Length: 269
Image (cartoon, rainbow, N blue to C red; front, side, top):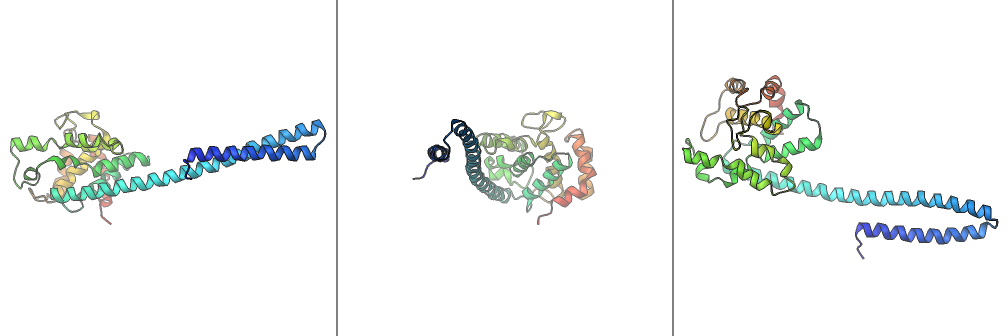
């Protein structure tokens, strides 16, 4: 019979309690005759019962909690492997540079750490958001997504829908909902001229502000189907010039002051 954990724990507790009461009362009755000794023995065995059953419950509950943690860990690992495979296919479809997603994710995490974020769960949420940054492009036609020339106005309007598509996808998945900031907001601009909402300044989630700098750096410094790679110094100058317009000035300063470290973190091992 395969009992659920809470039923099994209660059953073990009841069986142990019943056996303890029966045998301990039997021992006390056989060993002690005077009332005061019997009362003392009953008190002692009561305290022993509390200690022993407390320890038993602790180990039984810990065992089940650890088993659930292991199952959850394997489930999360499975989710993340699926996401990585999904995004690799997206990169190939979008014809991004090799390892684009892994590179920008590592750099974004490094920038977040340098900003003072140390909580592992918060960093993991940012990491998933970076990995999923362009998931909304799954809803953009190939004719627009990989067009070698400049998009016309109608095509550009359709391309700008990809953050909304990402929001629609991720907001319905409880596991990924906390990571929605980057996919939904990384095209917002510090001065409010971005999309999809046109929010500005600190209204833009901090993770999206980190990622915006990294994503533009990566897009400019590597060749794409529609452009050649820019020289590194020109890329850095562009980011510097866009401080306070496209980018959060504090994030730009942090990025430029730690550029070598952040760039080094992007290496694929």
